[in-house]
Image (cartoon, rainbow, N blue to C red; front, side, top):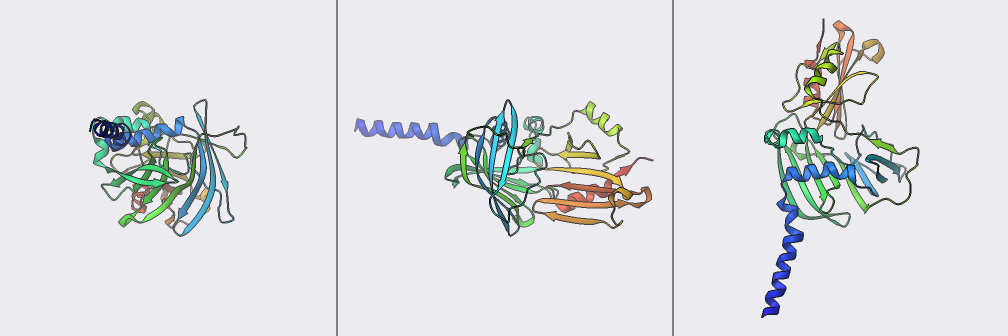
Length: 302
């Protein structure tokens, strides 16, 4: 009897030590763990990228060297094309850590997204915790992210549009923690992280431009931009991000008509301002409605 009780106690204790913490953590804690995991861990594997009905396979190597992230992506079949990675890792959402810190204390994040967790699934042979990120308005996309239960690395990421339509999906088929050897390939891409701009710097950035956004969805804040050649502003709510570009109509080399494009989760909306001979373009992982309203709200200084 004592032996049975002892075995029961040990089993219960192991469950407490191993099984409970994954779900005991709050959804926002998993989101923050994910943002740190990429900056601290090296890994490699085989990943598939699906856009609509097109599927491609890649070998991915993600290595952290002295606090800097590098990623190498190698196509594995003829249908795989080079991905434009827009400054972040190809297979996950990168929350802006400063934004997460700013909103975590006030509960502001819950104003724009509902978060919930699920457990029990497996991806690439590993246990995962599934994080559902559901927008509370029409100006954002939704996400379903399957996080490795051990490391919080996203092993599967789905970006959802209206009626939960899957716009884009990244999924590991094979995942291995750690990377052997050196990553010296010239194709390796350094991953950057955009942080929210502080108020003083924000004013300085805007003062250098001849235009500004008249409207962005509530919760979006100005973020650092990596585009130094063009007049551009980037905005993030900690999950989603979009950028606004302004150029002269003569440089754009296009007709003055408005135009919209979508590739997976990324939309592009171009809006001409003929009276100023300018063309505005909004690009990002947001609904087309958001991109269109931001573009039409732009204010050009007299």
